[in-house]
Image (cartoon, rainbow, N blue to C red):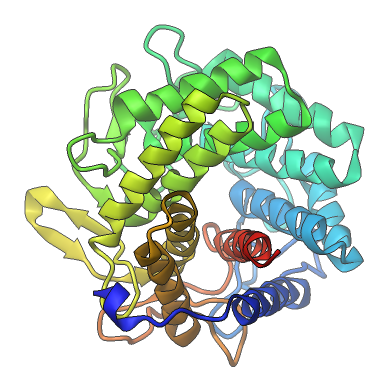
Length: 406
């Protein structure tokens, strides 16, 4: 077991290692991701740090860049981070925002022209998330008003007033469409855990800067969605896909989403000033983390997914899963004082240091296979590879370790 093999690390040195990694990750994006030809940021960067000519620019990538650099500035007060956050904000406001129907486009051409104009709620949520964090550090009124406007579009078009929860996607005019999927690997269902998790995450930060009564009610409803539908109370894994009536449409287990949801649910409860709710969600966060810890590998890594119906374990170790494991396990230790969780978190970081961080070319690899070999061809930046999970994990760990050291 991890607890038997992992020594406790020095908190001060551990915090320094996260501070250095945060600096390294964000400096990578400053050095390699700025589109010097067209404007904004490159849509894709390959494994050798070369920008891919003509690559599509995704709303999620740009919103996550905005959040990452705004949050890093909030932590460090380094002006270079604020400059990049400002660049991301201006690009999103000018190119991604739909001036006619509201919300943001799913993707643009490399030159910044609308490409896929559908309104994927997942992308709307991340844009609200980034804009809210940017407002937090700049008090830029345009950013707040844009975040509020997108929030209202989500509520007016996506919220299910009959059954609760949020529908996945719409066309440019917010009308129903047949293909709701985020990506080809996803089930084509009306409601997904992934979107609900990140709507909750976005609303949590929006509420911090705009404590609106209606927004508070929606955060409470989202937390209830997780308690009533999304979390399987028999095994404390998350159910990933549902139809519009919350009927289960998948048995796939995503270890990364499990452990990410554990601490994001708690973060949402923390902003509501409701001790009874917070106590209950903290207990739930520990239960989810304990279940995830059962599947941590001896080397500290967490596998990608498990498909029970096929008894198929996908043993790839993806970068974002390891990042979420650090935070989720450490949060569980802070709530329970169970030293095993602390060692789980440190083990995930040790694995990441050894196998996921590219010490030669910078940033993090997409992942490694079970035998330790790299998963090639995914690149360092792209539609889904962003400075979000890794920078956020570093920021969270720095803040949590700082509290432990004070």
